Amino acid sequence: MLAQKDAMATIAVKDLARARAFYEGKLGLKKGSMDEIGVATYRSGGSTLVVYQSDFAGTNKATSATWGLGQEFDVVVQTLQGSGVTFEHYDIPGGKRERDVHVFGSFKGAWFKDPDGNILHINNM
Image (cartoon, rainbow, N blue to C red):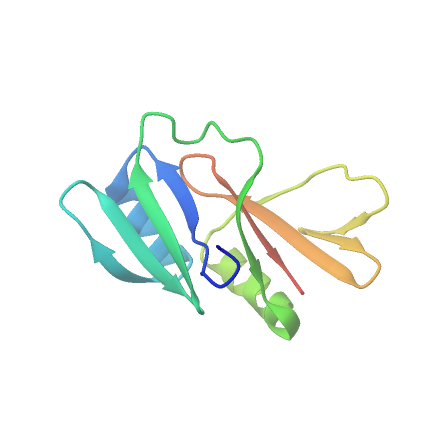
């Protein structure tokens, strides 16, 4: 039933204006739409990211959205660092950290948070 339909990442934020500055300004996403109740959508490749205002924003302690960047991973890490994004550092068994990048064999990943503490992930897959 859902296998042929696209899924969307949905991220709760406390302050939509602050979130828009982050998602548009720091991540470079282009706003798709914004409705009267404070829901903004962004296109990201062939996917949609939904950002909405909620009192429960930032309470998720797990990854909210992931971008697979392939060979562009290192360039995107550098670009995000240049725009002021701070990366998270985790102690993950089986991996090593090379500055802001976690490495597990050929897999590279980096995590960062939006202004409300939502965890976002990029990787080289």
